[in-house]
Amino acid sequence: MFELAISDIWRYLSIPVTSAVVGWGTNVLALKMTFYPLNFVGVRPFLGWQGIIPAKAESMARRTVDLMTTRLVGVQEVVDRLDADRVVEELSPGVEKMLSQVIDETMQARYPEIWKLIPEPARQEIYARAAADADEVIRESLTDLRLEIDDVLDLEEMAVSALLADRAFLNQIFLECGSEEFKFIERSGLYFGFLFGLILMVAWYFYDANWLMPVAGFFIGYLTNFAALKMIFEPASPKKVLGLTWQGSFLKRQEEVSEAYARLITENIVTTENIMKAMFEGPGSARLLEIIDRHVQDAAARHDATAGPVTTLLLGSDGLEALKERVARGVVKAVPSGPLYDVEPYANEALDLEDTLRTRLQALPPDQFTGLLRPIFQEDEWKLLLVGAVLGLLVGLFQTFVVFG
Image (cartoon, rainbow, N blue to C red; front, side, top):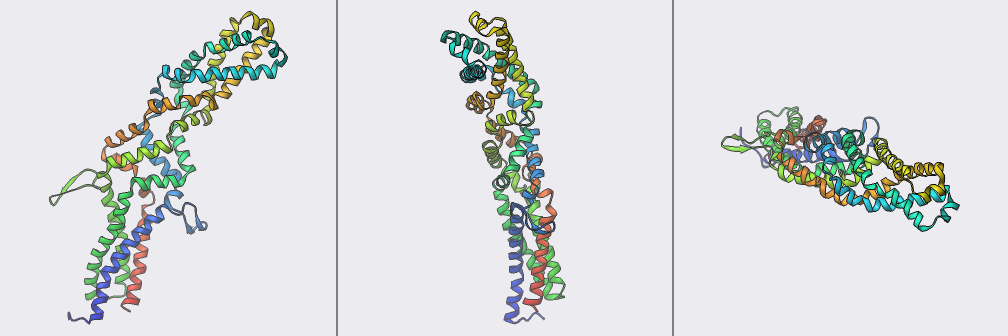
């Protein structure tokens, strides 16, 4: 009963080897199909493929960013970290220079002949009065911004928009943060596939029905992916099993992953430059410009009441009012592309976003930390499992009708 020809022995030994290769190959392919291609390849809607993450980019981005904005750092905290005195110190030189330019441009456009006749001391009087309250305008605007920051800046939308604009970078976040886990998935396919293959080899010896290999291949492909995913995220907390301590491999690397995630996000997505751009160009920009405009108008009104005699004589009350209005509009228009970015180095230092994200990620409970990588598998996990199962079935058919046919 147990006598086998040499050729039969090799064919039987090929079963666990083939199962190992199938387990490894299906896991590798499933991972590749998770991230690539970035754009749909084929004929829509069903004949073709797009990487799961690129295809679900908005959903993936929102679920990833949600962890950051709801549990790690909020928009109110971001603006509260800015010290008004330092902001004034950084902005004042640029603001004063900008005011002089705006006044020059306004006067040359509206009163070119008068502006030529105004002596330099009188011009300096106009510049000085315009700049006298610049510091107060900055302070008042920052105070109001703190109170209305939720209407001005949507940190989640800013981050999601940036990720959607660069789907390759969205892939990069997951690939870097989960690099060790993806290697584990590939290797585990080899190990589990070989183990299941040994069981299949024994079963095939005693019962060589044509359906056995394909059905077993289906389940081997499915179970190798399923087991790998389970071992990445479960158990969330260390547990003793047979005297050994077990914990999901991703959770073991919480400190290392936190550093990678914080670096990637703060160097590419939640940067000071992007935050300022979102405030001045995003959906809430109109509200921010209203705040600035209101305080510029108030400052201009104060100077209107105390305008110097030379200025009033040359421009008249109507001309002074028009100048005030146009200067205010010019300032509001110039701020986003002008002195605003003078504060960026200080803002980087004050916000310290990378260190904040890193330390808070490292302090998250394990069940919450899994939210960093788990989203890429949760929504379409069945697709990854199905890919492994179908490929396993095809290889089972090959073994049945070609190897043992």
